[in-house]
Length: 261
Ligand SMILES: NC(=O)c1ccc[n+]([C@@H]2O[C@H](COP(=O)([O-])OP(=O)(O)OC[C@H]3O[C@@H](n4cnc5c(N)ncnc54)[C@H](O)[C@@H]3O)[C@@H](O)[C@H]2O)c1
Image (tube, rainbow, N blue to C red; front, side):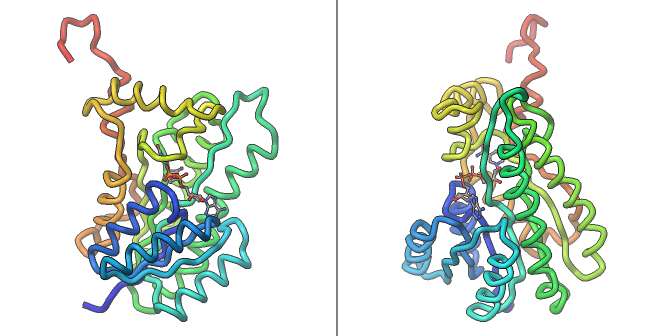
């Protein structure tokens, strides 16, 4: 089988770097896309030293010019791309009365506009070979979370866009799915709730409430993304796969009903 080429955005972060490592171990060449140029350069060196192929590309996914240039660079240096993981993300949490328009716009720009721009820039390359995988990161927060009106709306939008693109791009051989993590231990949720360090409390609460009784690891999400990026997942499209240890279900506690849990 010919080598596949993946673009992973937000590759300097927790889930992005775990996904890039996982794909590279499976023989996929990975373009490591992030605004943090230094971190992706380091990760590229690590993947290359382990025998993989990796290309660091500095790119702000909210900027259409940079996104176009990034995809051109990947196509020129590596070929493809065949796989896109729209993973770049930020939080700007606050209660509604404190949430500024800038908080709203910044979160939407990265999660929604960024995913749209990257999908638009890569799909023709995928359609040419009639094989492609677009994977979008949603979140358990799309169900609704206090202090996250901007993030919940953006992630619900990502799920809607996933279904629309699945319908549109399926006939071209491209599947489009979303993965919705619960609480995953990475730098991102440390800023949840609008304060640095709040993530620690969330992590403990998630470990206590989730049926599997632990917080998630970046590798839990990476393994699911890698499966969806492979040939075995060719009949799955337009779906949101929840990788959350059952966290939302754990909220339906049986305490007081005489059931030991
Ligand atoms: N960690 C969690 O608990 C959790 C839960 C649900 C969903 N998610 C989603 O998973 C994805 C990855 O999250 P993470 O926890 O690994 O976060 P992280 O903060 O560790 O990584 C995010 C990465 O995105 C990059 N980034 C931010 N803005 C960018 C831009 N404009 N252009 C390019 N890169 C940009 C950052 O530099 C960073 O490297 C995000 O979409 C997030 O919303 C995370």
